Length: 343
Ligand SMILES: *Cc1c(COP(=O)(O)O)cnc(C)c1O
Image 1 (cartoon, rainbow, N blue to C red):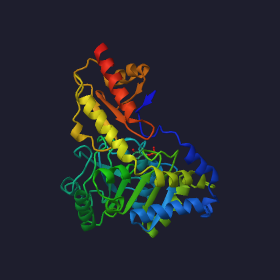
Image 2: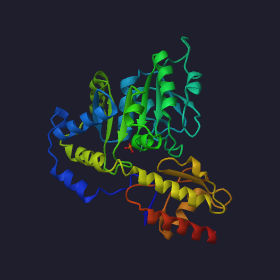
Image 3: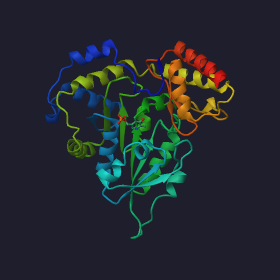
Image 4: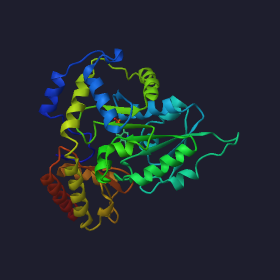
């Protein structure tokens, strides 16, 4: 089975499992897990932030960041397809009492210009704008990315209005690679940023939230409140350190494989995709003129040996990752071509 549903479906490699088994651990709620501490320090320094905090999931990293940044009744500017708005169960409303001000970015990417129009004036009728949440790369945007200039423009605008910026960087390493910049240059434009190890980096779990020392000191309490205080969790942090050492550079293979699938799909009659738009490891395509919705397409394709995720009524998503080879991408294209002949 070729599983392209997500870059979260990867299996930890034998070497990663070995690193996990050998990890030196301690009680992390007491701050005594040396492997967690090492990971937090390494990521913080890599991203140019003062401190980092290990999280069981990207969702918790985002929600703790929001809780740390805002007060109930504050408004959060966000793209309407952002993970934080779309896929986190309404958590910001429940946990932080935040109200979203949703904007329509181009493939999920906001600009200073569209953000500026959404910032609330000082008016007692209106909720104060306190936070801007950005996503890079943007999942529902098809792995779209921010240029450094664009991010810097938003950061400058936010500073002018005393608004914080949080970056959901679940796939920040993919974004930096595609933008031909560094994760640090991107992260520098934000007040807080989180990166995930359970996506393209292939670890079983774990995200790290980074920010100022003061921000992280506050965030630790909210992580505990939400049940994210874990004990000998260096076992997981060791997998993340392993991923950092071994699985970052190879992301370019995933990007090449994504581009290869996009080019292949673009040549097939009935499908709609612009390969130019595929810049990281996420491929979105439209079933366009095929008399079948995306859900049925995915369901009927599965027995042929390829798993995709329906991403809208007529949109499917394929994600490349470290457990799919270039040969399997070619095989996938063959299978889809055969499938299209039959429908
Ligand atoms: C997967 C994802 C998350 C959430 O991560 P989990 O570990 O699944 O909670 C957040 N943001 C983006 C962009 C993601 O793709």
